[in-house]
Image 1 (cartoon, one colour):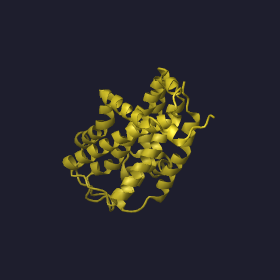
Image 2 (tube, helix red, strand yellow; image 1 turned 90 degrees about the vertical axis):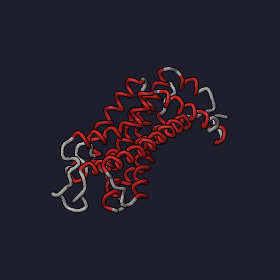
Image 3 (cartoon, one colour; image 1 turned 60 degrees about the vertical axis):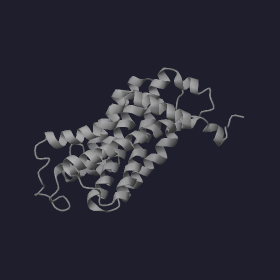
Image 4 (cartoon, one colour; image 1 turned 45 degrees about the vertical axis):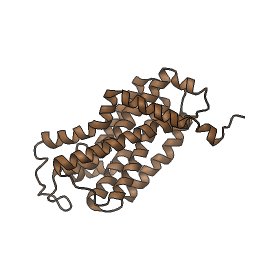
Length: 260
């Protein structure tokens, strides 16, 4: 009988996730990039670029009186999501495939879903730490405000993370080597940051770019968090877009997953 029952298929998942967490922390460079890069980015932009701490006077509400660096908060959280989803997770799984670790795992009762879930769990925990750290640094350094709708902002963050990890899993499902996974991840990483507003945050983003970005997973996440942060509305379109990516990408990544 080839079909496994649910308890058998998930057996060992906790131990696998714990092992992956230890390996994540042992990689000093990767863990620093995943955890500290967003905070470093926020501080660097705020302190190095002229005018980032001068109040906005030439834009309509709700932007009037805010500091330009405040507009970067949703963008930095988007970077928090994209960094592990596109630079860490695909490379780790492709490395395991290249080294034959996945082939050895395929001889155990563990299913592809278990391997993918363990990786997502570890990277989700990392991005939560990175997000809390970035928000704390923003509040202490630039007196950054909290979102008008905290629960909506949290929902947008979670949906955005789920959608972007779907993209990372799809890359990881097929990339034969770590180098190809890294290349594909970077190929997607920078366009995603563009649509998230890395270079044109908030009202500075051109309308065409914003329209296209709303249909990308990271752009939708950034715009949804911006809406929750500064407008207080519910970003219905962006929520549907992110949910659609989750519904499509996870089953697709599982179906296309290669052990070797």
